[in-house]
Image 1: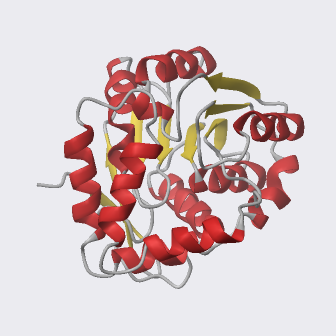
Image 2: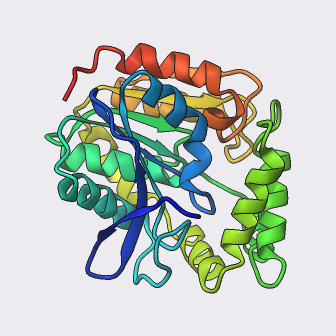
Length: 271
């Protein structure tokens, strides 16, 4: 049984969970083709420390409604701002993974009054060159009827290269079940076809403290270290490269991720 709550927008509903807590609010946003529960270990540890942790699903994913006109990082940024405003949150610590890191850049640049700190996890914040053959194979892999199975197999085998979570099998089944619901693979395909130009336009306008976390074995990037350095040079962000880890450090090595995260946000005041 889902414990999701919802915010309402003009086009549909965005699902989220809210732990409550006396310390600063932390909004955690997943990447495409994924669930808000990718932050399950982060949620548990931060809430134990008193932080108010809010995990949200992307439009078309998780428990959010399916049909939207736009699935870009700009639209994800709008949903984040809507969540902050509808929950009347102040001084938000914002964590974005993959495409949602691009959305976090946009929110931080355009609405710095809402954000106290931002964490970019395995961030897509510009259009990284991907060979056309690999791009075509990826889009073919997301096609019906095999898309959900191919994606979850790729996600668990390639994007968690070192230390799979103990519940990986159960988690992958949850992702697969979600993507097999009517309209969700189509939403995933549309999101995968968007680009990151808006994040790149905004990245040098960020004016909040930032941290970048990447894994050295993140196969979504031709050169993770080069990408980390490129982003850091434009943001002045604290840079963290975790050796041997892939695209989801918050779930693959949660202890290390939490240690870096709490060191970065530990001075956040109570709300």
